[in-house]
Image 1: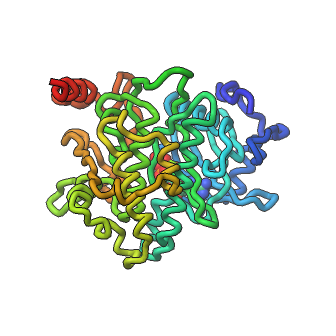
Image 2: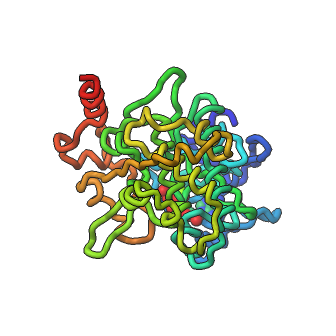
Image 3: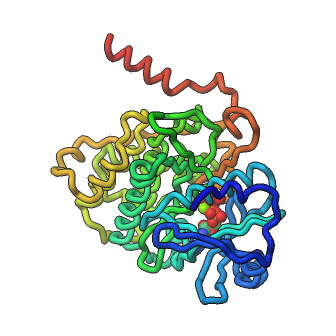
Length: 392
Ligand SMILES: Nc1ncnc2c1ncn2[C@@H]1O[C@H](COP(=O)(O)OP(=O)(O)OP(=O)(O)O)[C@@H](O)[C@H]1O
Ligand SMILES: [Mg+2]
């Protein structure tokens, strides 16, 4: 789409300007005027509001030519929000895949930033697992597996097929949208990281959502494609079990989904993992495959996690003899540091699957800088020590 970033300066976009645009794959995009979006969303009325996230609110709308759209409106104008907006539009302009939510357009005004997407009639995966549709069980087993595979294919594209490679960094149920056929479309690239060629991992400020964060990333800001693989593993467990990534137990203690699943998997009680809402209706072989994939993805050591290519291969059933592997299946459970969990307000509010951290300071670890770093063990050091110990 050319360089979007030049649009991100402070110059005013003339409300009456002829909309320009381009083609993002098969999706034509264009610049919308603020007036146009205002009228499409009934003045951004509360009745049109689909939800709210870290970036701002999302509104349903209909353009004058009848297209149903979702308009994301930036809530505050500051450099951080502007950067997220710029990254999102820049990344969206580079991607084209059936499982990634493409760009329909955007609007840049003096003090407004809006992104326009196609409206997804089945909203987000979160709304089906834990939100307004949770009671209706529209997600049967087959749909859940289709969502798992499609999301994995979207991630595979980001990691392998687009140049430079892209790490999403915020894979979670609210960022997987569902079209009218329940085909998943991974959305929200505001936190995405473009990875220069030849670079395997980088250290960055921590952004994302606690229950889905890979331990090395949550603690040390070490980001690589494996972080998305970890988050995908959590998403898969969520799809299988219908449980939240972090749940609050009576008494206030918080438990991660891997902590809950670990003993059941160790005992081979795979069927007990399945969401009771499915009333026992699932494919046993697929269940074993899915548990196997999830267990591999959430391994503590990033280098032991599979690549998305392998994940897609296993989910498609290309990998033979699943039963052999599943026989000794174990899942490594992650317990976040108490200090991290204490910051997880969203689970407290009980409306999300994990707290959403936006970068809050200019130092190395964003919100996690509040932690006493010396209390945490560097996971890489820890792994290195273990490797040395094994060799002795
Ligand atoms: N294209 C879309 N079609 C339909 N609903 C959408 C669309 N985009 C977003 N939504 C709805 O709006 C809600 C808010 O989305 P938003 O991405 O702003 O927040 P979030 O995903 O909950 O948090 P985050 O800021 O971490 O991404 C989503 O959960 C989803 O239900
Ligand atoms: Mg989102």
